[in-house]
Length: 137
Image (cartoon, rainbow, N blue to C red; front, side, top):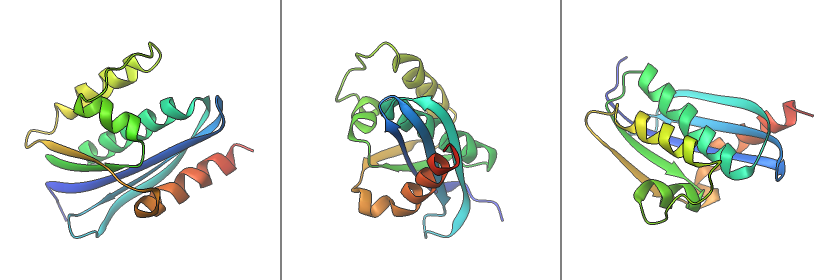
């Protein structure tokens, strides 16, 4: 089945900062029916870079599924506030990741929303991110 609108839940982390990192991505319909999910080990990076990589992977997966309107949910307040423009990206290592996210967001012709949520509301993506980190050990 083809969907044009979806919810994207992403989470990431690193064990150490920097440390071994992983991301979890969950893409669902707006009625929370699963479309896709993945768990990706990133190697060694910082927690904030991992959060950006989770969002990048999630947006790429949504594009692969033909989604034209995306609702993004993350528990990384920093990334959400960067994307909404509330915070400026001051870290030079995060700037290229931010730019990549901006380029990907332009591909969603019907737009996007992004919202900060509590970790408890992001449990599946958190579990997938931890599975990815576990694979790195």
